[in-house]
Amino acid sequence: MTNPDILITGATVAAEVTERGASGVADAQAIDLRISGGRIIERAAAGTLVAAEGERVIDATGLIAMTGLVDLHTHLREPGFEQSETVLTGSRAAAAGGFTTVFAMANTMPVQDTAGVVEQVQSLGDAAGYATVRPIGAVTEDLAGERLSEIGAMAQSRAAVRVFSDDGKCVHDSLLMRRALEYVKTFDGVVAQHAQDPRLTEGAQMNESALSSELGLKGWPAVAEESIIARDVLLAEHIGARLHICHLSTAGSVEVVRWAKARGVQVTAEVTPHHLILTDEKARSYDARYKVNPPLRSDKDVLALRAAVADGVIDIIATDHAPHPSESKECEWDAAAFGMVGLESALPIALLSLVNEGHVSWAELERLLSQKPAEIGRLEGHPTSLEAGQVADLVLVDPGASSVFSLEHLKGMSQNSPFLDMELPGRVAYTVRRGYLTLDDGELVAAADVAAAARNAEAAL
Ligand SMILES: [Zn+2]
Image (cartoon, rainbow, N blue to C red; front, side, top):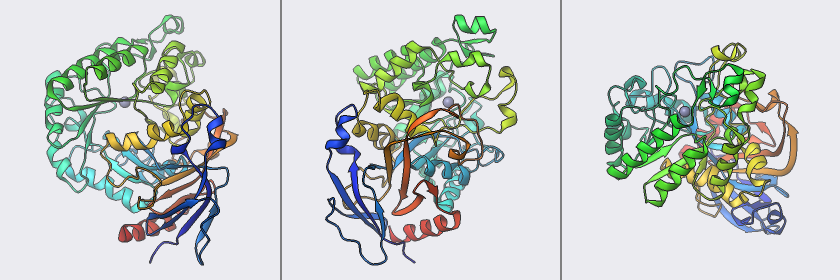
């Protein structure tokens, strides 16, 4: 079987909208794209390509086309925590959000610290077909921070792991961090650090500030993040290895990364959508949907993070999609789990906090959410543009739409979103992975059809 060809007509290409601010979109030239056998095979000026028989035609007039979004930081929870999310449900959430690839964090049960477990996760993703699932390997055995995991075996496995992280926990031991950097350097891998000094954050519940004292919640100081980043950029410089910093949350972290980049350290940094828009003031409600690791910070930090995205100190946006069942969130703040779901809301929040505020252009947004995370993760086959010959991983977005974000938008298993009931801009209309639709006019394509299309695409590519 082969998947039907797709003709996309009249789309505006994000890469050509290089002006910051809303004006650029109207001036950009529209195009037609023809997709066959998993790839873009033709690209021409809008109105040029004629539909062939049996071809699916998508009228993309007024929509913006980007290469498929890539999330370097997703928690899919399977194996072990299937009451929160599975590879299937998490990749459905990804497709709904415009993502064609997610990197799955290692804090599963068993932990993704052997070739067997990472291969299992990758296979589950391949079978589901809603997104390419690239497993992240644990840095230390069982995330215990005591011994290095089988990094080489995971790198050489069928899953060809390139990103290693103990995320959820910090690799706190300096010698282990050094050894991990030395190891990944041998195959051009990267260590993604969850920067949190464990001693400085024992029992911590929210950003350390006058507000944490007022609310009686134990404070989480900015220096607990910044001191680990400072140590690790020095280690990365010393070893000459690649380091990635997960979820930057403070103005001070931005300054440390800026300093390191100026010295030529091979460091990249991510920010989550929620840290670009929410502040610690949300803790006043004691609503545990706002409890997250690292915590929501101050206004000043939010502005510094946005500015760092605009000036390139922060390289990517990553969701830290962290599903939890309602019983873990609908309880007292102190007892609640850390984390928020984020795949379905990432693009709207990026539009709201960055594009609509004039901090980045659509072209820059594509770098932040697609090209650059693919580069950091050494993702093979990801399209570098929407030119003929590239793999057809792409998303079509309606920039003018807006809606109240509701439970209907959430396609994963958990509902712990801090954005429910907010009016959010933009609509992910179509997601195309390897030349077949996973999201069709805002609706997820049925699981059996996606699984079959994924097998066809695998055979064709
Ligand atoms: Zn983390």
